Length: 350
Image 1 (spheres, rainbow, N blue to C red):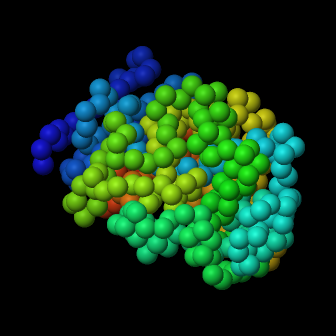
Image 2 (image 1 turned 135 degrees about the horizontal axis):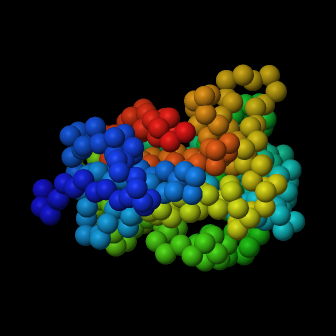
Image 3 (image 1 turned 90 degrees about the vertical axis):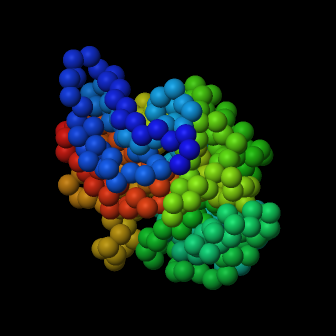
C-alpha cells in the first residue's frame, strides 16, 4: 500500500530508562501488524512511558496520532454528569420522569434513575446493534436522528435494578439529559467543562474523515477513511465517537480520578463504587460511570471501546495511582489480545 512506513518508534520520557518495558510488551505484535498501529502508554510514579509500533501517517510522532476511542468516550459523559451533580443541577437518584426524555418512549421506565443509567442497571434495550451501527456507516445520509434513536427502543430488557447489562442507550440518554440541563449541544459542554480546563489541543467530540492526523481505519484489509462519518456521529453522539491521542486521554483520565481539576474527591469515589443489584452474583464489574477491568487481581477502573476498526482502553489503578492507555486501529486485533497487553502492562509496571 502507498505511503505506508513501518516504524518502530521509541520515546523515552524519563532519563536513564535504558530499555523500554512497554516495547517488550507490544514489540512481539509487530510481525502480525499490517496496515495499522498500536500505541501503549503508562504513567507510573510521575514518569510517563509511551511506545508505538506500526505505521505512521503524516504526523511528526505517534504521540500526535489520533484515534477514535469508541465507548471510552462514555467516561467524558460520566464526568459531566458528576459535575452537574456537584452543582446541584442533578442527583444520582433523579428519575427520568423529571426530564423531557421520558415523553419520547413508553418502553423507557419513568422510575429509572441517573444511577441506573451510569451503572447499566436501567433495563433499557440497547439501540446500537451491529445492524443499526453498520447501517449508519454504510448509509450515512439516512435518518439517524434522535427520533430514529427512540424508535429503536421497542421493548424493555428487564426491570430497573434487576441486574446489570451493558446498553449504549443509557449513555445516549445521559447525553440528552446533559443537553437539556445545559441548554446547549454536547460539543459545547465538553469544550467548556473538559477540553478548555485541561488545555486539550487534539481531543474532538466527533469522528470525521477530515480530522488531520487521524489514524486510518481498516477492516478486512479495506481502508475505510473515505466513508462518510455523518451517520455514525449522529447515532453515537456521546456514546462512542470521541477522538483523541494517547497522551490527552491519559491527561483526562488522571484528572478525572486523581485531582480536583474536573470533579472533587467525593465524586471520584462514586466512579469506583460497584453497583451489583441485590441477588445477583455475575456482574461485579459495573461502577457508577465506569467499568472495572475484568480481572479480580487488579483494582482498575475506566472504560474500553471498539468502533468501526478502532479499539481503546483507558484504566487507572486506584491503589498505585498508575494509568494505562492502549489505542489501535484495526478490527482484526482481538479484545483478548488487547486485554492481554493491558494485563502485561500492569504486571511490568507494578
